[in-house]
Amino acid sequence: MRVRVKVCGITRLEDALAAITHGADAIGLVFYGPSDRNVSISQAVAIANHIPAFVSVVGLFVNAEADFVQQVLSEVKLDLLQFHGDETPSYCAQYQRPYIKAIRVKPDTNLLQCAKDFSSAKGLLLDTYTEGVAGGTGHVFDWNLIPQQLINMQLGLLPPVILAGGLTSTNVAQAIAQVSPFAVDVSGGVESAKGIKDVAKMAAFMQQVNIK
Image 1 (cartoon, rainbow, N blue to C red):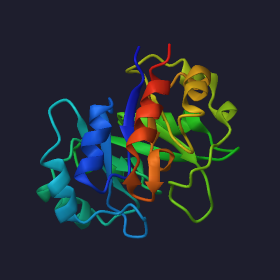
Image 2: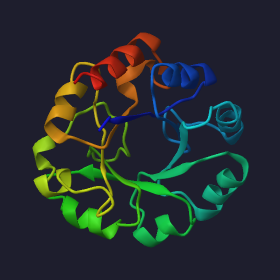
Image 3: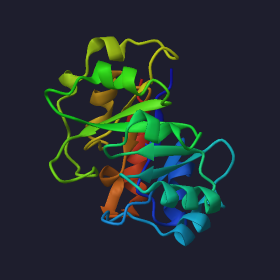
Image 4: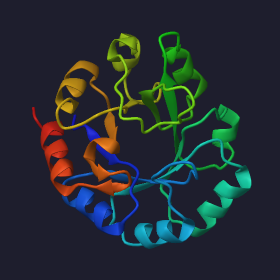
């Protein structure tokens, strides 16, 4: 099965279209003020309105007030929500929209329990834990912390694994070979500066993803 790819932290339409041209299945828009990749609602609208069919637009939130999420949903054409903070399953489900839940992985994180807790999610995004930072650190976590039961889980029984955290064109093929994720999520690994994507890096990343 082909590994899907989300390019996150998009701040410019030209970067979104370049990512799609090189094969990205989804683009991520960050609605989190402290992030260097944060976009305003107007920026998000300008990008989302030009995304073609069969490419998902994902809105990323971190411990956001429900009213803010609803405001974004009312103005931006989002296909999927991504919750990257300490949100509970009931919080994530309240919007009645498809969502994925990010888990920042530590050695004592019970990922099987997380998958069961967020069984209504469309994916479990595994990212690197860095204290005080929600994500986008560019650091890789120990993939051996992912239990084999989760890797081997058939689609539909528990949320599929989306691998994130420090992925680049130099390590994504190894990551896919070791973890066999449903999808990979990249942001800093394809940038020339925070929030500015590099077309050559995106092309190289996609080439490595597609290596058989």
